[in-house]
Length: 573
Image 1 (cartoon, rainbow, N blue to C red):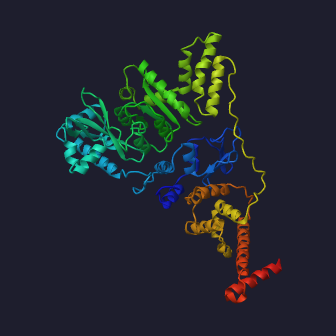
Image 2: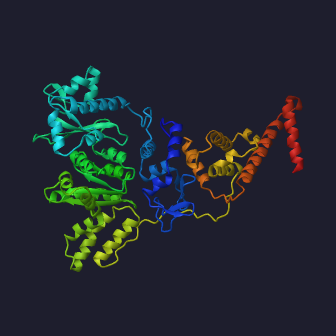
Image 3: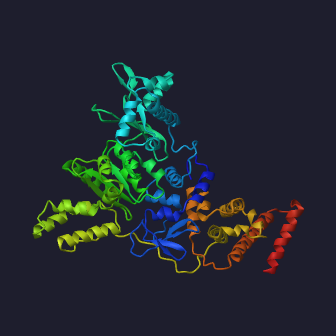
């Protein structure tokens, strides 16, 4: 654990999360007895050795040794930092992040977030209170938007005029500097003025629901049609997506997300019951956008115009998506009829017909091979060979896995020959699988492993206590584990492992949590036996220290009794 995230928050978070659900959203699992299995996403293999335990809330690969909790999986698979993984899990279970958490070293941006909330509230109030707001409300009604949708998306209104927001929120030099830093003011001809004027306002929220920027749309023919907040310390266009927070809030399970171009497309689709649309913010789709989308859904549908410009934009999106298409992720393309956008099309055909178009969206594989085939003569040998050379750079961008193998097979089928290449780099050597025999461990390591795998052992009565006098690091960890479980008897393996902030301890606890112990019905007996051996070792260690004292007169009466007990134990052996 890192940063200033309270341990209690992590404990609460992991107690609410199901590691099976988290992993299954990214790597399809199949049940195998009391556990779940899959081919490991962290190394190449054909026989599944990746195991997920719902009881332990832990995953482990018996091939490459990867193991951990839901937090560890997100950090490794989605390439998130620890704070980002915490935030992702918290959002998935509806757990509010403490405002006091500092996610990274650097300036405190809370004043900026607070100011953006104030601005969003002010814009929202203007939509119902300002004398000129009837133009905005009439425009929204003409677009078919209800008050409910306007509320859900916190749609507002920036009145005409140069300094309405500035006068309302910029009541001091410090506040004016903050407004400028937040991107809410512009400058020109030696003066400052409101950036958004006479526009419909769309607050842009991050995955935690915090307002990080705004988009403004004109109601007439003025330009620019859309105006976004500039880059600020809390807003980056290449990372944020309009509507993603709202989609995750409205839908528990998101089977697909539709990526469109504008705010109005998102809210219009939501008005017709399609709450799974999001939009980029005037930029091309970036890898950060796609990583964010794939954390929420296994399928992304790119929506573009069907004209040449739209298909060119779709091809760029395809190139961006290829390196991110790990197994379990899908990308499709929905091309709109000429002259239509999502807003107009859904009003024309209705919700169900639009959903059917989404279901029938063109798979990435079909779009890729179809476009490349247009560039060659598939009736000739030379043309099919040319197809292979054109396709190869794109297929090489795909991560290794089942999808890449299937794309290779499809290319082989189209070209009429087997062109699947062996990897030029040898597969990493995997540790040998367990022989099925119990792992030989020191008593303290076995006691820790037993307690991690069977936390209910902490409830065992009349356990030896003398072992706690041992001063080894393992004894201290074992003692702390028991104390934690006495206070929190419902903690799972995952919660126990994540309780330690030291990376090396978490790593070793993770290995012990998945060690094969060959324990059946005698867990208590084995655990008690380990503690008894530790207790004996602690007494022997104490005896060694006592023997170093030169004269019995230097010993206390308690020490003399202990030494007699130790000698008595030795004669019984």
